[in-house]
Length: 389
Image (cartoon, rainbow, N blue to C red; front, top):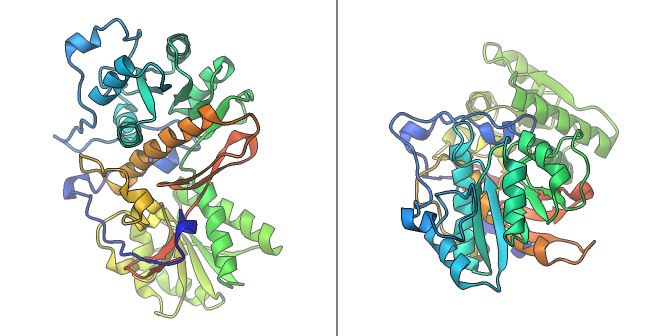
């Protein structure tokens, strides 16, 4: 996506959060090392992101066993009226208590892309780890050409040996999963962002950065990936310091040895540290820092994130509608993931074996890499509305 234009002006002043939803945990990136945990739901706010199909339609003969009652009316009409179209199975745990809302957000993004592009029909199926193989086989038997899903790593591992058509899993695939040439992976993995951040800092001419690391699991993973990539790029270890909000003077003193800071911190910790630094210290971070709304305490931080947020006025992003229901920034990343999952599914279904698969996506520039994993390249910008490069 960033290849489409050399320079854009952006402001990271997003307004999709409501106060009650602002505390939704960042469960998305965490899920790449473990199965996705339950989404903590704000009281009284249960989003319905796709219209419920009428009961008469749910009972139609074309409805497979286990098909979701939340398939959109547009997708249902396509099933009955476009028999020559590509058929995409959307196999997600929409009706499970743990992942139902996350799956609904992803599916909403898939449906938004389908309604805009109109080059395939959707076949939505609810499936949990226990029945994903059965539901998958039923969908393929009913004419599905390509599949989007599953969402959890357990379901992916369960399904992997049974995959018979191009299948785009929406999580990372563990080493314990037997390889299958038709199983692909698209995920929002923090390690990929960490490696790209190291590359960005190297390209900016930073030679001696300091990596400030939080104690939570996500920050630790980010830090390990950054340190490994920095060593690979330059042959030496990066200076690391733990974040201690009660001893900022020690951090500030240590930063005097560095020509830039890389933050493996949450947005709150990053804001406290940035406020204590001198204005001339270059500071870098990942999308972990972008939690939406106005973040003046992080003004000037150079960070990477999806074109969906950094380039909202780009024609390739504006083509797709924003969510009908207000979402947290973290959750809206799943919506963008759903849009690109649909677009990649179309490409996978029509690509020749061994062909390069690339997409200027709303979640990043996507390229099929090793082990059938899609790599994401993200644009970089400055918090507070400065130049995006």
